Image 1 (tube, rainbow, N blue to C red):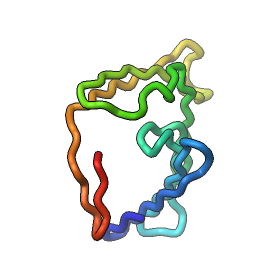
Image 2: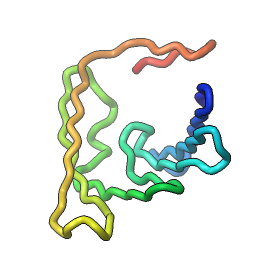
Image 3: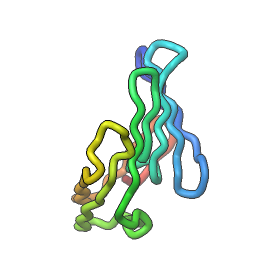
Length: 109
């Protein structure tokens, strides 16, 4: 769980590589995000908006992330307001690795 003034994010394993992230911004209602391995958002639901994406690229091939790797990931937005032929892409460049420390825990990122 990450805490900041008026903001709280809770990360929980959901199913397989899917992570459920619950964000609260100073109120009990917030936002729920489902992401692939906590890195690539697949859906975002909250009081203000809802968004879902379908990955056209095979997300399994991205991991483990390796220094110097470059990936382009294609998505189709699942939104009734988007034209049927809309496609988005996400570019991911792995430029290095470092150790991230959060209280008593250390993570290689």
